[in-house]
Length: 244
Image (cartoon, rainbow, N blue to C red; front, side, top):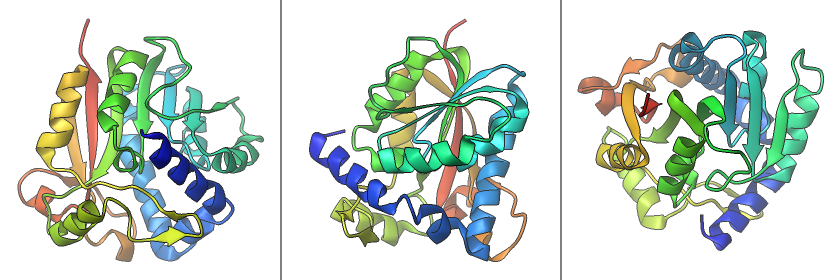
């Protein structure tokens, strides 16, 4: 990530940290989105991991998804480039039954040794990183061979095409705060698939976000092939690190 983009995104989230959870997940529709994120992780991540597995969240934000995973008895780690978001996460996770390690870091260059983790996940992050290919390569460096990488991206190949093209033309999100806008990008499948392959991953499963998510409780993920991909504003990818 370029220094200017990283600094801009960091300022945005530092300012946003105290209201982030309330603004995004405090309403009924926001609670449905949060429940959906947890369901996706349970489907794509936790079912393949044993107790004691080492799991890193890249872009852990306020720690809401790390907190959800505590009961699985994983060894949990989180990184985020925003000290403000990490402060909220530390407060949330302070009383967790299992210790969770949190560090300030960006996702393209982390402080961990190679082949440290059984799994890495990153929700609502990849589209904010211009150098997402470097993030994928860093994830590949950190994940043990055969390990899991789960992430999501905004889906340009969908009925939301015009909105995605507008974001890509601007090179930034529509919404902003006093720090300004964040960088954002919507993806064609060739982009994220190519970047994963070059980083050493094989795609295992792709799920989609249903268009009725915010208006219906307990929405199930779509099979993001054919019509499912067309209807999905966001898609959730499970990939495996190549190697024995």
